[in-house]
Image (cartoon, rainbow, N blue to C red; front, side):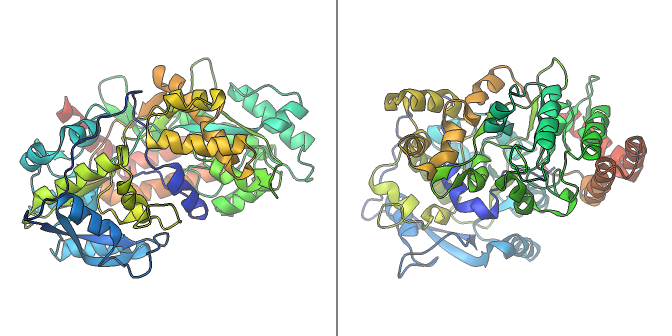
Length: 547
């Protein structure tokens, strides 16, 4: 049940630029919220936290977590002094958070997952934030964190008490099908709109070998197409094309919820994948290849189709641009559908982690001040506030100083799809409103002006790019959102890992033609017996309580 967008390690630096500062769902700029600097004589309050030491954070000479330009700026601008109870490498950070919770040695505030939020609430270790948030959060902050209608905030409520601040992000992150358009032209094939089109293209790419490699396949897939990040080489969007969904809870038409993994539409999608495998349209070794290894077949012209997120072009650029020249042409398309009904891209709620405040914290209002200031600065920074993004030099030099801000929340909605393709096509800067609009526009226009290293941004933000499809998806509600939120139920905690492992085992055997597609029916029965029925009962008790 836990899922969150993550950048692939190999392109983390690119994506840290690509995903920051998403635009708002309005064309009007927000009026800056007053965040006055601390006047002389005013008391500076101190709040402690814990921080991950990210490999992409590079300190200026003489600076560290103990003393740096970002912490100094927070103290100067809003009178909040930040200290760290401990710092751990990102690979060990989550484990150390568990130890910190178990030993009841919390800092004033820290980031936890949904299960930990529930545990800390039940253990009475964290503060009810209802009053302190209502009193100290600015109007801008309250609006910012309820742009989705308040769903994310509801996930942090227990008995009508606000127990955490959602580490929010945009849940409306859709998957697309990326296709080699130069190959479509060469083979005189139509753009894919249906799964029949998709299959015809896959078979043509396999048979005609337009890349001239001698070994061609129809679709790029890696060894974790369901369980891990599916930003590229995943099969989640393939399932969606058959109106099947990966491990979300959907309405059963009778007022309750059912798990998507055991629905008959999944069987149909698996049958199609098995047929592709039999025809040699999938790499026979995909089950042992990680994302980067699987993507090598894309880079070397053996595969011309892949499902992925809006940022997938930042991965494709590795093969598309060689020695400063564009050698592969790609197009982004909505998920093809198996019938006359549009495919619905599955999405989550846009939150799975929360900032909590210890019950022992002396200045909880300091944490809310950090929240207010992050939102204000991220959305309408002054020139001097570039310190929060770049450090004391106020300019980009690859240090990623924004990682030093101990409390960060993202926009729940943006209008990039309405603004960017139009602005880029018409070279019109007058309609750019947000920082993200301007950053993406500048990168895309560099490509237009001949900088091929920015090819990826044009395929994301330009006319016909991934973002250009979003307005239609949004307008027609061509998405399906998980109906269950909050902490995992008791049986989920105990049995979910087993159920997912069993699911993947059966799915893979079916896809690779090691067992009949009918093995899916046996899996459904086993899923129910192994705890699925009990989880379904718990989920529906939760769902009924919401009504």
